[in-house]
Image (cartoon, rainbow, N blue to C red):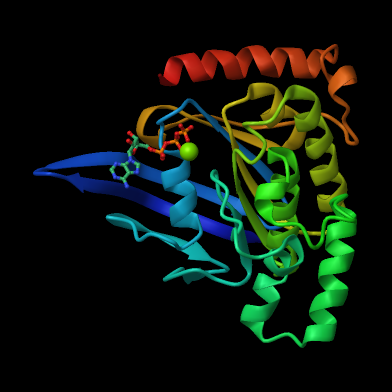
Length: 253
Ligand SMILES: Nc1ncnc2c1ncn2[C@@H]1O[C@H](COP(=O)(O)OP(=O)(O)OP(=O)(O)O)[C@@H](O)[C@H]1O
Ligand SMILES: [Mg+2]
């Protein structure tokens, strides 16, 4: 096992007027390459703050993030980030949004078209290439964001409650799509959620955060893949993990 991401004593505080707000305190985590780690925590416990730090988008007040053994000093093209809120560019069509990471890399137009067409097909949005984000439903926009993230061919995917605002059926569909895209890819995923079932369905390992990002549980999820939501609900391992994680969440709040 190779360590991909490592944080030690990570603290982030924000200044608001004259007071300091601590959002994350002394957070230490090691993520192995190729693993799917789900991070579970209640609203406001510092999940997005933590992911912004892992993405190199913000700098810690204290502590370090290291990626492949080197300190992370800013965003890295190897790390894809699907943020909690929509960041598709409204003035660009879906195709042009998906091609963004390739444009930044200077990929030639023909190659960009080929890659974006393939990704748009993989996330089930064929026929919507020329549409603008406002012309798509919330679920379709999430699919487009997923395709855009994958266009950069990142080896590491950071995802912040990507399916949180969707109806239950659509969420299940997208979870299955994500697992299909991930399986066999060798990519490493850190997936943030506040939903226990989602965390157990997706991850190899679940890390439960309490207030200020304190780790209250860190547990391997020993449920064979492929996993289906319906079968999972009656799986004894799932049921006992669910109970334990619910207790951990409660303890952390
Ligand atoms: N830019 C900021 N300025 C001031 N306070 C902030 C800022 N960003 C986050 N916080 C505070 O830090 C805490 C953690 O916020 P964060 O967004 O990381 O929570 P979260 O776990 O992602 O919550 P949610 O599940 O609702 O998305 C909150 O109390 C929030 O108010
Ligand atoms: Mg958040």
